[in-house]
Image 1 (tube, rainbow, N blue to C red):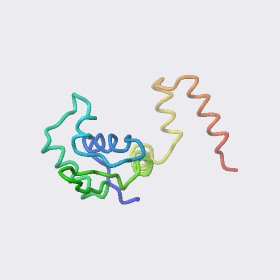
Image 2 (image 1 turned 180 degrees about the vertical axis):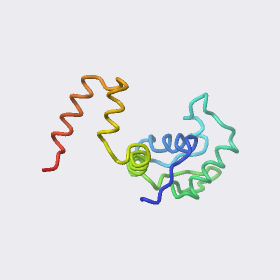
Image 3 (image 1 turned 135 degrees about the vertical axis):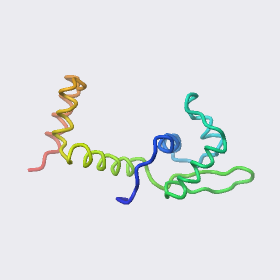
Length: 128
C-alpha cells in the first residue's frame, strides 16, 4: 500500500466517481462519463486513456461484458487517502499534526464547533 503514488487530479476525480458508486459495483465507461461534473467532462478517448492508466497503476480492474467494459476498484478510497495524507503531512508539516492544526487555526479556518470536536477526538484517542 505504501508504494501508491499520488494520482493527478483528473485521475483522482475518476476514482472518486468509482469509489462513490454504491457497494463499489462495477461501472461502465458511459456511467463514469455521466457522473462527471459538466465543467470536467472529457472526450471519450481521453477518459479511456485515463482508465487505462488507472488500471496500469493498479487502481482498477476491467472486465468486458458484451459490448461494455466494466471497471471495478482494487484500491479502496480509505486506503488511498491514508497514503495521500501521510505524504501530505510528511511533505508540508514534517508529520506534525499540531503544525497542521495551527495553520488552520491561524488562518481562521476552524470554527468553535470544529475545535470542540477536535478536542473531544483527541481526548478519546490519546495514548497514555
